[in-house]
Amino acid sequence: MKHPIFSYYFSALAVISLALFSSCGSKRNVVYFQNSDKIPRFMLEREKAESNILIKPNDNLFIAVTAAVNPEAVEVFNMNRTRTTLPAASLDVYGYLVDQRGNINLPLIGEVHVAGLSKWEVVRLLQKKISEFITEPVVINIRFLNFKVSVLGEVNRPGVYTVTDEMISIPQALALAGDLTIYGDRRNVQLIRIVNGEKKFYHMDLTTPDIFFSPNYYLLQDDILYVAPNKTKAGSSTYNQNLPLLVSVLSLTVTSVALFLSYK
Image (cartoon, rainbow, N blue to C red):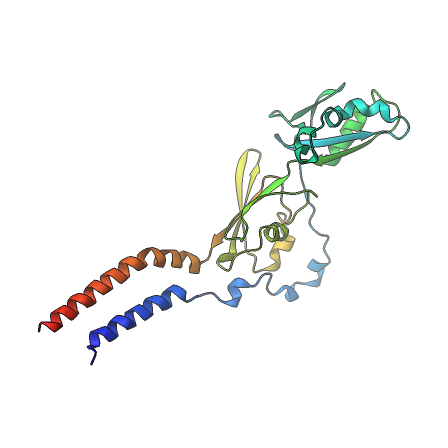
């Protein structure tokens, strides 16, 4: 007949295992955008948030200038596209890099200050400056070549993502990263953004629909999203670190007691 001490031993192991594999999570902590059906109608009918992307130093701008009547007249402004034979994968060499003073340097025109302006404001500015050299109307297209966002923490595919359409929302960025893992804290997502050289931190709760009405709904270039681990993940890391020690101490204690009882 087994001594009661062995029953205590296996019971203790069962408790440890239960603590390791149990989850204190609930549907309330996992489901996104809860109670969206209770949002007032006037809020649903509001105009959607606008993306306010402004040009800043280190942005790489693709600038294409076209003229319908005389295309050759504007070719000088497109030299950065025609003077290289590198493949499309190296599109960054085609751009005009915004220097630390916020300027780009264009043929004939020279330095143009663009930092702090939107793409459309730069289009109007360049149209005005180019009109000093070319009389016919021109069409200017500007795109970011290095628009990137980073998604870190408890997501399935953390990394840096290049955005081609220059408008990406927080849910879309999380979808690119494969969504949150089951251990991601939906109530504790941080947006880290550099504003005028200073880091700003914004906290978001994805279990509510409030994010859809947030001014930060659309990400800006170089934004960082960080998903914190939930209590289950944080607790399991502690359990996993201490488990070998707990089992060793428990085994040593049971063995010592068993030896003591066998000689008694």
